[in-house]
Image (cartoon, rainbow, N blue to C red; front, side):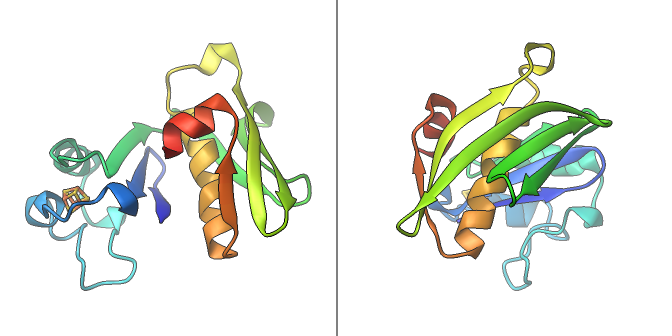
Length: 150
Ligand code: SF4
């Protein structure tokens, strides 16, 4: 399971397949990471600095984090993609094709001016979350999606 948790400044990524339940997150910032709550992560309950410090202690990288840099990421169901916006301008996208109960992610691209900001990861996670909610299998084909997911 892949999930993102966003506020205005940061996006937290959680990949359950990498979680080995060392619980460093739960002990490091219990108000945010609470396995008895649904959803178990609530990033409104602590400062970004406290959340970031706790995530850095996750031994398996099941939890990771990126600054948003003012970039908004949305799911565009009509055109089978996720999009990243800087204001009104599209600066990145991740595309998939639906076939036989699976979403094949075949393309991820971010404008070169916006590289190394975690935007491609946010785009891929946005699609994977949507696919998982719809009980769709995800087949990563583009190299970036493969790197994020495998
Ligand atoms: S610290 Fe990382 S590996 Fe440990 S429970 Fe939290 S998310 Fe899972």
